[in-house]
Length: 622
Image (cartoon, rainbow, N blue to C red; front, side, top):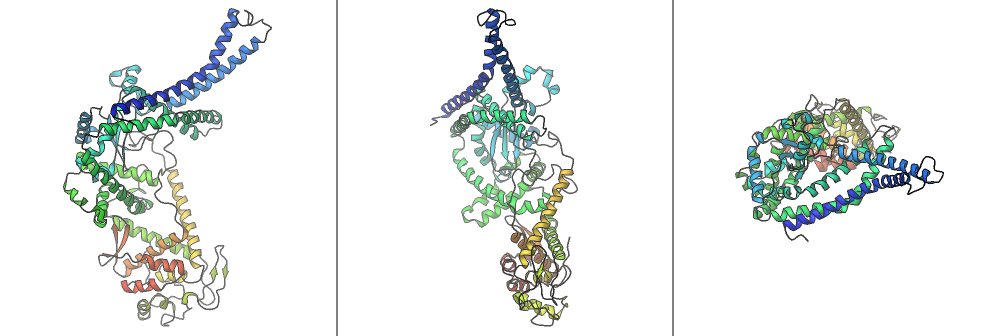
């Protein structure tokens, strides 16, 4: 066990030396054939091994010498190849938004004062990332530094390497913390993180970390190799790097544990009581941030819009969570204290950059705004995201209905199989749906939607038949109540339509010219991270029934907005909601599931009648 910060640092240094010994052992193994070849050649020239003249010698030592020499050259070439890749490969960096000191002087002052209290070197820079965590990151690799021609004062390579060797790591802070945490809480939360710069300054620990990160980057480089001629060499580099990683994995893990223990021990006397409160806020922030991304941001990202104030939105989401959760009572009183985002000169610009990066990481959107990838504010969210989402899903549902085989036999629906074939229905009308002669028949289609809706149909608009044409809610309900397999068929076709749209969108994104990494993009990815976005998919694929339920809900909401005076709204924890007379209606899910799963339109009809929705009226689609 680690007894204190100095003991923890010594334990970490011991583990780092073990990692470096593995590196030295690997180098020694690579040099063994060369050493044997040198001994054989020198022994032959001096006459101590075989004859003095190795050219005319008739013994078998000549063959041994040249075979060993050839093996030594091959091993040296392979070792040089592995070493070159490990040294030159860019270690993976956490995507983040760099914060210059000019844009956040108060934040830099807070971190430096904290480092002085902890008696450790201050971080070399600060960056924000859209995640609920904070850590130190080594960015001293030459690929992450400035170009050689721009070195300060035109210093030589030795001076630059020396400056890079003593450079402190970068402090990466989760952007939600900056908006939800108060200044004192942020300082207490960052204390053990900043304390980690002390062990990081140890040359042995820094060298061990560079070696492990270089091996990890080499594995990523070998996995990305696509040229057929370089495939064998890349495969060997990957094999060697993975072998060395397995050899030093345990020592590297223990080294990092010891570094963390030493940092935590050093920060014990700095705002310890306040740190307990800050840790409680970390859990709350993570819950609110996750809900905000999955329920609020994801629908907008799918429409090609990205909320430009995610970090400001997390404050509203967490305030709402505090209001709903009795365990979080009293947390809202903190909002009167100074927020940590006040330490930034332009919090709006930083929030915008972090929000765009979040969309890039969690959804795989473009790295830069464009015509098909534009920002949206929270005030415009209900109209530009919620309403548009509903109408796009309603339009997709009606496109699927247009492609389905129509009902047959005088209005009696046929049972359509996924293959597109039709079978006649069993005797009698399924789910009470009768092939009506008109809306005036009390046992016609309107009767399946409840008495209130049926009365509206009789007194008002005429019915268009058992499966009404046009974008109406009646048409959707009649199709889903047309047989036992009606919902299954629509769900399968709906899933296929959505998959086709996603493939088309992926092709459009791939056709866009990629944005180069670097300062212009604001994010440095490192080898192996730029491919395969999104890095963190937000939701698993939805089933066909879930897709159908979502689309039917969207159709009902469109009908409510167009015919009953309802309005789209935004809930900070649940995302898009329907407002009727300014009040949220959260009771729509059960009637829709009864329709989708059981083909029972009765509960939905009662809900429509209560709200005053006219299902026979066409809705506006996008």
